[in-house]
Amino acid sequence: MEVLKKGGTAVDAVEAGIRLVESNPEDTTVGYGGLPNLLGEVELDASIMDGETLAAGAVGAVKGYEHPISIARKVMEELPHVMIVGEGAERFAREMGFEKKDLLTPKAREIWEKGLKEKAPDIYGERAEYLESLRRFANLAVDPEKHLGTVNFIAMDSRGHLATGVSTSGWAWKYPGRLGDSPVIGAGNYADSRYGAAACTGRGEMAIRLSTARSIVLYMEMGLSLEEAATKAMLELARLKDRFWGRVSCIVMDAKGNHGAFSVGGPSKYVVMTEDMDAPQELPRVEIPVPNKK
Image (cartoon, rainbow, N blue to C red):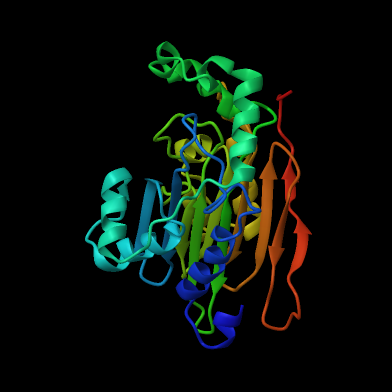
């Protein structure tokens, strides 16, 4: 909010807000302190989109860099590409002057080790025959009590321009190299200042299959209200057949600055702040009932 009050752009505000969360070691869903994959490696994904120009940048499976959101912005501004991943993204980060950092905190390592000791003791013991076939342990990432999460921001500046940003360390104990919806423009992140913006968190594979963020904005373009657009997209998720079906949530803002948040598969909350507020306000998301799901 301070960035916006000082005349900064929506893109500036989104990046600044997400960087704060990426640097917080107590948040195990993103950046420094994010929970690692099956091999104990912290892999980060992020994307950012300028709703005024529809320019976007994204990075995936990045190791050793605390602020993937800033790398994603550099992709948007410096490259002819939208997304780069893995070693290529890390090479680009070095070229842009980003500093390397060990992202695995003692807290995150403890959670990771506990999960492996309880549910995959063979891989925790690093027996070669198990490490050669990680796929048998991939279901750890979709355990009902799994640790997952994402930080997503939508901002509107004084010019009425919208921007969205998403950053995550992905599912804990995920298969190395897994990407969810966070770096996928249209799935976990989409902004168009003419109509609105949306960003998602949860089981990203579902949002990828339905292009959830883009769908919400498209429905608003077609004339649906914010609530109608988000509800329609959530119902599509609710009906999706998926062996590992899980909760998906979204935050939404329309072109007039109206906002809301919605969830399917369980309750959650979101935080909002406007220029006339002294402090952020936490509000419940609208939970959409899941038909014929147990």
